Amino acid sequence: MRLPLALACICLGAASLTAPARADNPLPEPLRVKAHSATPVPGDLSFDLVEGGKVSLSDFRGKVVLVVNTASKCGFAPQFTELQKLSETYGRDGLVVLTVPSNDFHQELSTAQEAKRYCALTFGAELPMAQLAKVKGPQAHPFYRYMHDTEGFEPSWNFNKVLLGRDGSVIATYPASTSPLSSWMLGDVKAALASASHG
Image 1: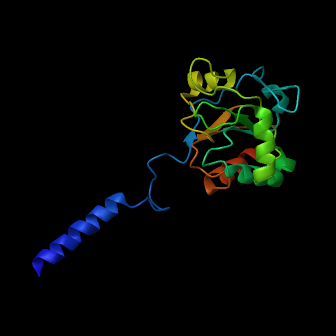
Image 2 (image 1 turned 120 degrees about the horizontal axis):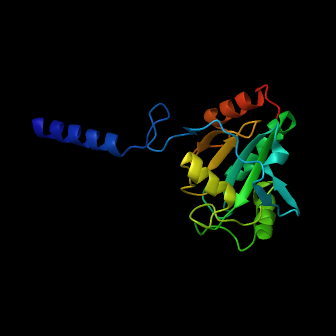
Image 3 (image 1 turned 45 degrees about the horizontal axis):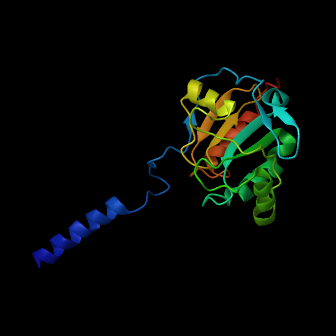
């Protein structure tokens, strides 16, 4: 009888090693990374928009901005629905959600125009969307080059997120696995919106 008991203990131990992390246990990938610097991101960094025109980060001073690199065919693409809800809930309080489509991870459509149409039809997302851009490497968009050089942040996958405060400073970054409606993100967004700094 001792042998089956020993085997059961071994199997139980193996299961505990392979089981997914529970919500109350630390995850292998951090849910968020706090910013290293309180220096505002340069306001002259800008994005060309699918809707036409260009928007600079200085245009958002006094608002809280969530910048998300996206891809329409990614497994995390349903987060578009959550991002839309986040925008609808907190937009009137000063939150802007800016999506940046990228094919760096080979899961985006050919053009940003196609991506915007697809996301509107599939996920009901009507968020501001930049033109297709690189988000990693030496050819990355200037915003992401700045994030790499100053914060050591480079998207490791689609749907990485950067939260900027009302003064333009980086509050935190979040991996793809962090839901836009998670307690981490909602807490940070609410705290940023409650900030007395309006530019």
